[in-house]
Image (tube, rainbow, N blue to C red; front, side, top):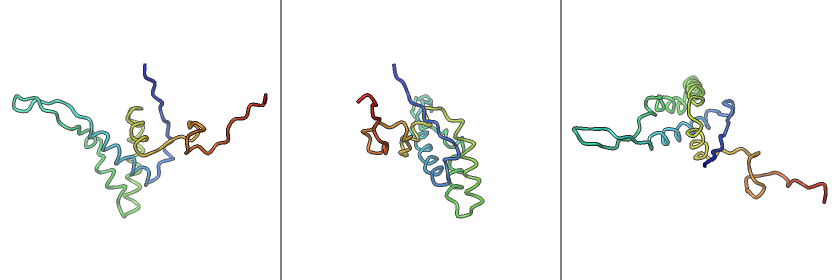
Length: 122
């Protein structure tokens, strides 16, 4: 049995830079998915095109724009898209961009900046 930890991210934590990073990684994750299709009687494997269907190229271009209004539109697009993704897809994207919840880390993890829990019985 496999348990997956779902990373809950408040949309307010995504700014233009982090949304761009996540959108680029999401495009990569979705493009890595493949499916079989018959072309002229032969079965071929084709890359996934869900990123295009979700208008990721437009969102990424907006987030990269020099105009603040376009970047705001891109951020709005991303905020609308993110909650519609499956938890597994969100987890893949967040893992790939190195996003983590410091409260979930073990003491031994170098990213953890917490003091060890002291047992009052000692």
